[in-house]
Image (cartoon, rainbow, N blue to C red; front, side, top):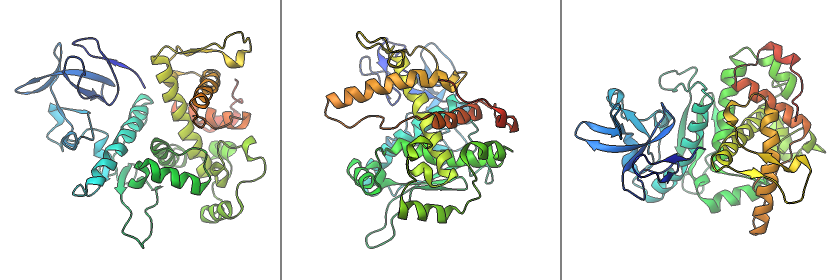
Length: 364
């Protein structure tokens, strides 16, 4: 994620800011320019300092869940920004805890949209494109006893259980599932991976190329999941999969790899925005050194990402341990996993066709 600057006073700003803490100017995010704009309020609307087109805030700004802008010329449509237009169902806001959970959920969702916009991926709305679009349902569990809402994807409709916005509940789910890592943003990145498998692989004529990397997706999905939950992952799964869950079925392997690709790109951009370099004192091993001074969303190869990612995660994990926390990135990137990330990289860059079967392995 980039850092931003207030055009009035030069204060450093962050993605979710809606007011400059130093000078008090209003702020709003423009999806068109991927920038956080410093705004002055005119009778006709909000205008960036220095001039430019007029905006209004997304209608959901009134709930405190969005700081994105809508061009005045398009505000007559529904008053929602490009990210919020993908909401099919929002929580019952007469329940106080639902509003709190929705705010947390929208922070994660807007960060997802930032990455999708940076990668210039298709963002069709399910309401406008019932066959090719995607949308979100944010739902709460019914009163007990009753079936729990399952976070998941079904032909473009992504359901998020609002309990995932509660840190304590999410940690409980993580332990119950035996996972080393579970975040709300990770859910968004994983589930959108299923959607883009449908759009870019299944409907994009890339099934054979994908199967050559991830395996046969025609395997019975329900049976594969049942086997996974009953028997666990195969021995030495770490050599071939980014997570134990990725070993359950090629669809989950793709979605997990997709999520980690977005983790890597966004975190490296943040590191670059802060000017980070990793150079351990008196250590000459190249694997531990990196200058993160490039745009990861425009990297030519996944190898460029991995060369920076490994030293960064070694440092992040060491810092977390010094604070008494678990590793920030508790995953191992094997050669096979890097090859899968390379497939994702070429796919989002529009470079995957049937020729991908001839694609050389990723170099690190």
